[in-house]
Amino acid sequence: MKNVSNKKTTKTTKTTKTTKERPGREIKIDGKQLGNERLTIKIGTAENKNSPETVYISTSFWVDIKDKDQIDDFDNKISKEYSREIKNLYNKELKPLLENNKLFPYFNENIFIYDFPDNLNYNNKKSFTLIEINLHTSNCIKNEEEKIPLKNKGDQTELFQELIKIAKRMADSDLLKGNKKFSIHKSKK
Image 1 (tube, helix red, strand yellow):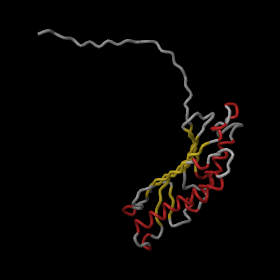
Image 2 (cartoon, helix red, strand yellow; image 1 turned 90 degrees about the vertical axis):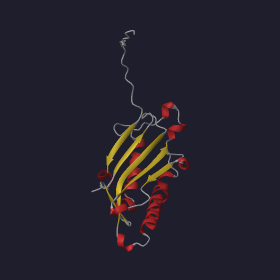
Image 3 (cartoon, rainbow, N blue to C red; image 1 turned 60 degrees about the vertical axis):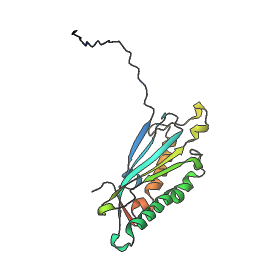
Image 4 (cartoon, rainbow, N blue to C red; image 1 turned 180 degrees about the horizontal axis):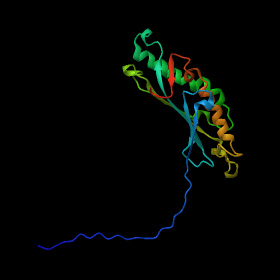
């Protein structure tokens, strides 16, 4: 029998380090800045922050149901009502701000996403909710020199300020303030 040896050979090469700018950007905003300490809102883009064609506003929180013992057919009815309230957030609260917005000219292509468990308040516990809106910016139709960056500091904050205005409208809604049949909490506890 032959003796076979498995030798590993390693080849080392010199590489030059190149620094690449990370394409995306996410800015976390405490709800206190928007008048609603129950929320944390994130504003960002997954694209080049110097000329994003799409941006997002995202918030997540825990929801509980007020007056649980006064609702018949609890699970089905309350989940449908909660879903309707979240849809109204976009259709009634945000629509006036977005419909003819010069920075977000593609109202019909906006993407509004929300997610919560089907069995809201399973085992009488709070349920996690995520709400996100993706907006197409005017950078989609501008020349490279005219594009607006997503910056929260300095002199080019126009896009960020408009996103803050939209986030503030979300944070001020009756639903997210806890003024409906649902109480909103920053944490599960």
